[in-house]
Length: 440
Figure 1: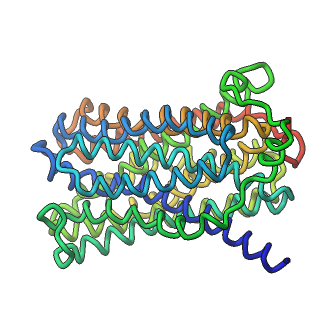
Figure 2: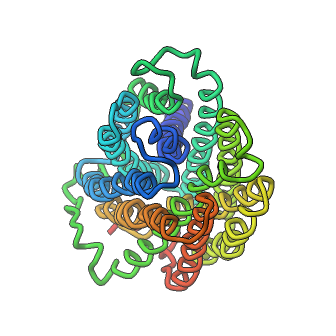
């Protein structure tokens, strides 16, 4: 019996970790492939207003879909159960990412991208609520949430490594839509997480807390309006703003670096394949930084009691790192960009793990998915990722002859502003009441 329980716990953690890994894999794929894909699907030239506008649309329109339907997914997580919603969300983003590989127009790609983003948004909320309730012991819960979310950064490493490998061997792979464009093979790889899920689904338990309450008839019906009532209003708005800032720093600044790198002096003279490989290397360093940030959060989460102090340990250094990297490093050469992107990844991505640990502790069982979803999907995925559109518009309007230089300045303004805003707002972040999950 003890052996079976241990095996099941490892299975639970494995499925959640796979979901977190491919969440990041799908999200971070776009910055790597958006440039070559738009060159293939449109007639717009890189750096032109039309090209930058499409970049902004591809970053932000899926985020709107993810925010709206992700909020609905959070509600359904509380209404229908954590496991059911988790399974269908992973299947959705796996299948839609595969479909995007066969898109023949930028509109078709955009529609598939919207479906992928919806699946990713719902999966995070369902998985965090599911894990938090499956591990009632406070210390064990913090460790499980912290270390399974580390795989989110491993997903970033996977996408960087996969892109480098696919760019190198694309010509020897079977043709997709009559060609060998690396971006299509990258999208096809998004189907992978659905395979272990289909195999493991019969062995995955539902959240015992949610299931027992539902069977006993004591599970309150979730209502979105409740998270804006007097009891939860403060934490709802503060967390939404701070999660939005976390995503703004990532999407509006860090994830723009793959488009800055080709404009660096020592990169411009490389062959196209060498340029794309260099982009992959920079992305890899950013993900290594993100991995370090998630590990640091997992370690600190069980040692630092104050949640406010814990998040500020990531915000304060970021206020310094972001302007140094984008306003100085991006104009001094590739080596400074490589060092800066590692540190920016560390202090940005560590915040994502923080929210996965923090949010389940401030909402009761019947509102856990709904409350998490407002912060993560409305605040983060919808409002926060709008920073990519802001960065694109700033890039088009800033003076300067170099598109990559204008992009670096725009990204620096957005990233620095996000960290400063989050640091100021963090003074109002509520501390959770006790170490156990609130039940009502």
